[in-house]
Length: 416
Image (cartoon, rainbow, N blue to C red):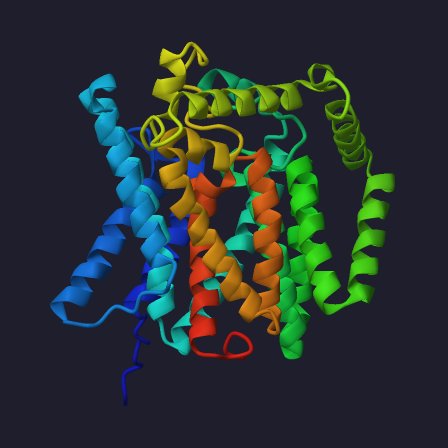
């Protein structure tokens, strides 16, 4: 009688699974104030690197690795420049967050090295993670629809909004808006997989809708617009009809659309008459970020030293609130903390990624990533999504899949 063999899970696949699990646990548990993801990802990436060195295996570097390394170098240089203005603990904390950015970006490099079979497993894990994130949001919305009791802990007092385990509707909604075109593109290329991919897509869109996040709605609209214009005008029309029906029939969604239109109208007249408090806070956040940038335009105030610089400038009263570490705009945050010198290589990373997706746009996944990336950049104007770790983990994993597909010169991810 032969014993059953347990299939061996590749180390890189196990690494991706653990990272996504940590991103799913998210805010449910912290270790001395740090997310599990913050601590786990650098450790796992370090183990992966040691394994490569021990086996003397070559590491393939995509083109965007160079500007990423340059951005990290400038970010650390800007931090050293402002070292005297920071306490030792604040300097070490800011340095650690630079390490965190590097390790999250490194996830794309790890997935880029994977074989097609390993990337197929990674894609399945990414889909499972996104569906579970949406399901966790439904559970939260049913059992804890009112978050006002968590306001003393620094969280916004959201009511009747899907927050999932990230405790923030804008980040959750933004990620779901980014992932929707990816799954749509995959289903477009793989007809046999539509029997489960389309229901999963519907569940994700419903979850996104329930976040009541205007920035997520805009990101989703932008992503579907790009996808529709480049692939199917019929799909574009169907998406427009769906969004219109949601806006007309679901009262909370209709209210969010109306407030979005009102805010756009007010910006074109008198900005200070923004009709709701969250939009006024966002505008104030942009103004703070711009002020910090103009104070130190070349190298900024030091990577992840935003809240300390804002406190010293009298632009921030409390560094413990969750929104203290950056502007509501990712690009303004980078400008304020690393200046133009850091902003240019940071932006170059995404430009190179965009060019790679453009070359691979004939595949459903490539077009989906292109659409999601454009939506994400629009989203990052209103929310600091490009620097949010729970967002960065699945984003850079999916970027690794895109780079891997481009490397193989294939038209899509390996078919099932």
